[in-house]
Length: 477
Ligand code: NDP
Image 1 (cartoon, rainbow, N blue to C red):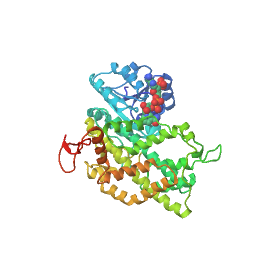
Image 2: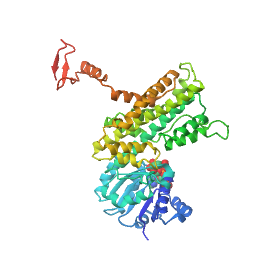
Image 3: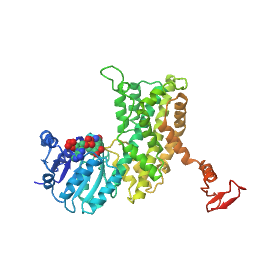
């Protein structure tokens, strides 16, 4: 027998993805650099389906039916290149290499181009949902040549998560690096979502005076409404968890220094290159970075802050409702920014990404899965060329309803000295977008003054310069 798909790289992700394929009735060839992992997989889970355990690259490739579909699930970066170099010479034109790791989309573009010259289809495939998702159904974001999706797509649709309406959470995102780009922005949005939730928690704790257990209940209530999402759900679980060793809330015994693996940082770096203002995502990445500067924070412990003035019980309940509004409005803004980045990437690289389809495949399986994504999908269904999510009538109305509370929450944070970089950045973005005039006019004047950089006028076409050092008359530039 030959395998319909092969997976090489059998750490948590690859192992679970291989099991997912097998559980769905596919014969799966498995391979790993360290053979012990392959053996362990077949021994432990062999009864779940048809696995072909292989030890060498040659054996692995020989086990695959043609055209071959070979999934790589190894550490991103150098290891991915090493594995491609090992397998590519063994493949034939028409075969497919599918990289399910968290590759940088620029690497994916480079690899796709190189392999295309050998006639090999290279599919950069974003996978979200962690190890549980890989096993039970992830959200899958494949890029690469469209024709590869004809034979690969149905298999991915089978193993993917399904949205509540039954639709598989996978689509052909676009050529070459489009899939990994979208996965990158997914992770950036995930950072922003987590940061906003963190700010909501801190405000409920320090401004409203609630305990972690009480805040868990508040999140549970929110999870019944429009904020219904995986991240809100697990937040309630984490906040209600009590440390067995000390009897304290778990959240109080964890070192408050957030780590990161890099996809959030990439999202911001690429946004800077593309000139897309993803301020909410950037603040989320910086907030993690700041938290990790232990020495700097230690040295700053004596700095002055406002006197704490916690709210009374009734005020606290009303404040919690406001925080929900602020969180929801800020979330709309971070998705607005993330989708702007995808649109800009799509434009830059000619990917023709369908933004509605992207929101649809994030509805299940992935970390940011949420009822909210149905609304984004509806917004793009109503108007595919929506300039921004904020241009959607429903979102605009919801923000209009939320904005007073949103402002009050940011003010309360400022007054009490509770940092809200995410809420504040989102609000500043919103206010800047809707402003009829921005101080950018002054910036242009300053630039023209010190560097003769010229400016455009509101009333006439052309570029102009004022003779600042002379009689201050204006000349055409
Ligand atoms: P790791 O990222 O920890 O990678 C371990 C695997 O890579 C092992 O199979 C290891 O083989 C193999 N490997 C490392 N270096 C080489 C090399 N030079 N040559 C051949 N094989 C090598 O595993 P994960 O399962 O956590 O992740 C796999 C991929 O999926 C990564 O790209 C990750 O970013 C991505 N991903 C992970 C998610 C997660 O939640 N963990 C979620 C979504 C994507 P060996 O056993 O021989 O050491």
